[in-house]
Image 1: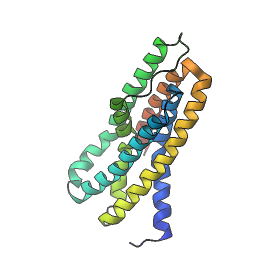
Image 2 (image 1 turned 180 degrees about the vertical axis):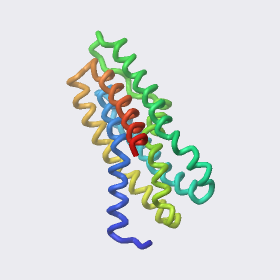
Image 3 (image 1 turned 90 degrees about the vertical axis):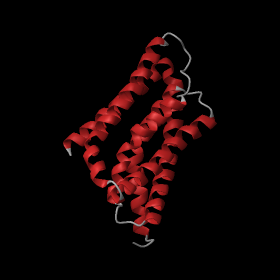
Image 4 (image 1 turned 90 degrees about the horizontal axis):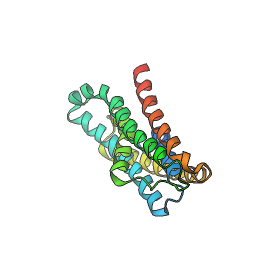
Length: 195
């Protein structure tokens, strides 16, 4: 392995592909809380970034240590993501229905929900550890960092876009955000079942 342009291009493309679920969840979070502070947007994008860095590394470590145990559990990953996103999305829909008569936005996502979102949207990145198993640790780390940086940028875009449309949609934004999260969970599961 060498530090070629192809290595960096592949890493960026991995980042874009893996960040799509996090982008959609960021969009939903922005829709839910259009008055979210700049610090909160950085916290949300940073959480997704961190999970997108850690998950490929965890997959790489699994390949090099406990690969057979991980492969047995891999078929459950889409189901775990679906369950987490349905719980989070269901709560957003419930909050949106409870506050539908009010004209104010829901509060920004809390830390526990944010961590669940981070796991749910990055759990598929564990499998990237298998694709980079022949890399040494430094290359695996650099690839994971690039994936994380790309994810951060894409999620910031999703949050800002969601905030802009969240202001327009007002009380319906939380319901829409919840439906988006449930849709992402179903998409992850269907993609897994069809492949």
